[in-house]
Image 1: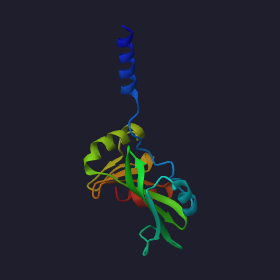
Image 2: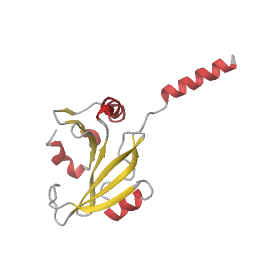
Image 3: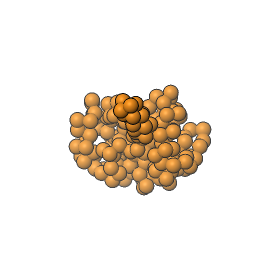
Length: 156
């Protein structure tokens, strides 16, 4: 009887256990500098590289756009390629490469974490209330800062 009760309790806990996290990685603090983000990513990436994006694609770049490429950042339960995009030494976007076959699971988890989607179009499924979106091609998830919201959300 005790084993049955224990088994039932474990099954109940497993059903309520949260799945892999789909929120913005904690290392991605919008407004953080390149140096602060490099320090936050130390030991979290298999490889890390910082590079200049020239010409910049981000809006209103006054000095420079830099990007940290992180290979191996664990997100949604697996190591991923992630790109941290900086405008004038301020983190504004994070792109996380995913697999197209993860779409249903990631979108279900994003809906559970952020509420219903705000936009669905040919290129993106967006959760503007969370500054997040799924991009179809290539399959990736983007998180963007409030400062980038008007620019990003124009694409949705």
